[in-house]
Length: 175
Ligand code: OFO
Image (cartoon, rainbow, N blue to C red):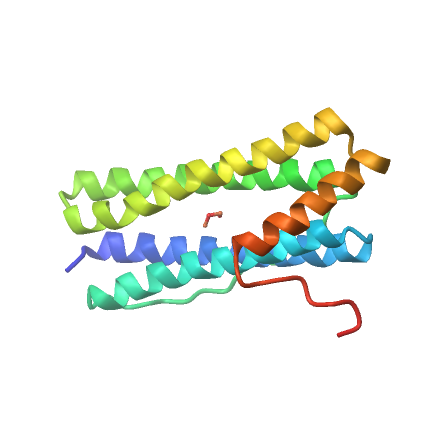
């Protein structure tokens, strides 16, 4: 049993996770259109990850006999030009998600809601990893360049990373 406030806030977080999935799907499409296939695959894998985050929360609410209330998902912004801007935007977004997760943990603690607190710890850890991964990509873009050979190398790395990140891959062009 969770409080009405927690139910409402968890539903808002489901919406935020779905928005994240939508944002990364949009970035994947943009990357593919500018021929960054590895980057497109990486954002597609991120899209799949965010869907699993939303579904974890969805499952938690149902397991707590709480209502799932799906709201409209905002449209993502027009994707920025340049791979650096794409990853900087991703980092900014993930930091906002981290703050939202931390707020949820604060609420769980203030309500002495131990079950939700334990449930949310997985997300706390996940956000550390997500921010670190994106920070690392930005660092490599700064080091090797976000154009020409440096970008080609990093795009290849992102394509390889996408394979280990999950099931989802950017659909083959023309498939
Ligand atoms: Fe769901 O972790 Fe990113 O947003």
